[in-house]
Length: 364
Image (cartoon, rainbow, N blue to C red):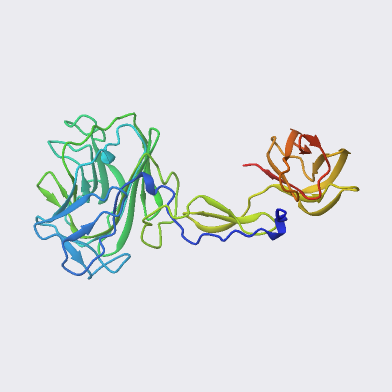
């Protein structure tokens, strides 16, 4: 049987796909990609909900933030409905609603999104209210008959004929609104918003009020407040999968690797300490990281001493080579502290020195 490789011989190919770590919590993801005039609109979330264009709502290539197209609404009677889903029921939980808009009208009462409207919706986003310093505002109702936010909460000053990013988040009982990544307002409420009994509507509220302009990259995330302070809006369209998000891949002998997440691919020191040594005769270290020395405590028993003390006791993985067929061997962690780990190696139940011993130490 061949011996196990040294750490310096290990190389695991790294993944190349970045992703959205919160994609599993994404309730709706509309890129509004397509050919000019198309009424086919795809929900790229895991739910793959049906979106239906109504009264002339269509894809337009005249304007887009990403992807070469967006949703065009005429402000008269165009809107899009999305199949009702419990993933739009926020209750008292966290959430994020965000989108890009290119508003072409200075007229008031131009909503981006609403859930219900009989008579009050659980939430209505993107309403232009000239009485509130010409701001885009949001309203929410926990009882369907009155607004919990009676005067509306500002999402930022209304802009015309320019792409602008807006976001609303709830984190615990703290609500925040953002314009182009800058926090505009914050307020607290314990309100629990009721489940909706009708479809989500994009570009319409209460069958009376309609948005005029273009909408791109509309995303709803349930259970997650993606933004709790100022941020930089995405410079590309939102991602359609988790990809390799939050995975760590060891790629070389020094136990470095890649941490892959929404911010891209970044180098990471995955193992906090490791060593590969010869445990026969005078102990000799072949290769190591954050290990100062090996203390031979007797046959098959060793202390691995760390260069720096850990703040908490780490996790240890150890192994030995086996060059003999039909031999039972093992390596055991006898004890470990913040400054060292003690291991002992056995063969057929007897403690024995081993020619190749590897120890890897992990800690978050």
